[in-house]
Length: 314
Image (cartoon, rainbow, N blue to C red; front, side, top):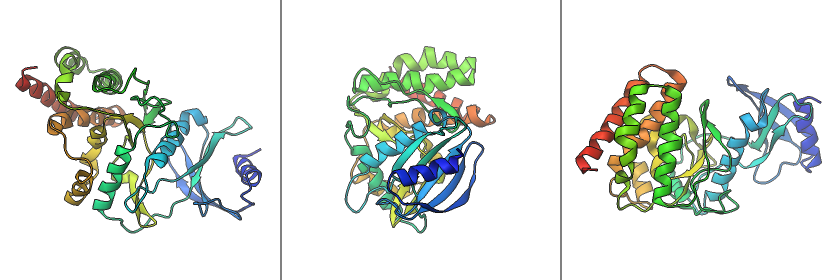
């Protein structure tokens, strides 16, 4: 049975009528995309957006599906909410050749405005962990490891949901992990000797609770659908809400965005001191993906973190 046949069988089996058309929407290096129109689409969908791949669902789609589901559950109610595509199904083809992800098709267009996006992101970050959102224990981490770009992203659950737990998680499973992949011994020595043992000083006086994060929020993963802001293609996990802005150098957030966000989540003391730490994670990831000048960018961010810790007398 082909994946097309597999999808058609799923549509009929779940009471969505029959497949009326399947339109290719292009492909990437690792997946193909299509819009599938059915005779009885489920609410809120009007049709399905389907991703297919020659690789396994666990490798390709499980992390994305669970990330979208978590954000969907935490997207909130009211006027300023995120339009997250609803996930309907994902899995391996019964033939053993390839996998698929079936979600709601969103028609992107127009603009919902930067302020609305900021308010909607704040509502996402304020949503409490829950079983429905995949975090019954209120901890940092995620139910599965996933990827950020093509880089593996480990997400083991922490023991608890305290600031101390977060510091350990980000130290070991974010910066430490990316440095190990990069293999630069000078930066690894700097991290282990001069930064990691003092990292907690950047979080003095701040109480951190787990927030669901998109995890890879840049302009290419942001849009507008049905007049509401939308984010997609996540690398989600539960973390400190400030870590969301580690890609803001590639997101063009303006003053209206921050006005909307800060109307619900004020800036915590030390935000500017922690910013280079969170930027460094994504600069290191970009180096591991693309090489080039991102290595020197990451090194500058870590130098800045070390200097801030020195200035604090940590």
